[in-house]
Length: 94
Image 1 (cartoon, one colour):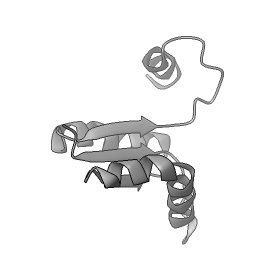
Image 2 (spheres, rainbow, N blue to C red):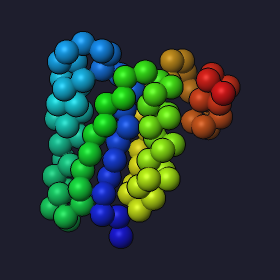
Image 3 (cartoon, rainbow, N blue to C red):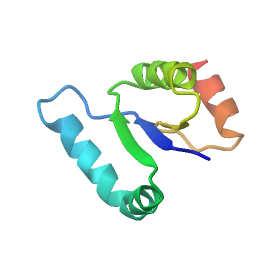
């Protein structure tokens, strides 16, 4: 059973409060899922990572460092997604 959910999100820039505001917004947007996870004693972590490359790098590290967690990568598609998501990202960013 999953004991932790970690969501790695692209964005937030490098402004003083922008990452905190983005984290707060996603927590509100995902509030029902957050409450459901916490009611089942599942830790909930939203990690704001700034750039697309940094987000992907942190996500890849999380797969190794937190293998028992449900690790989620959330990045901008940058264009319409007409293929499988991983194929779309590979073609856009390799």
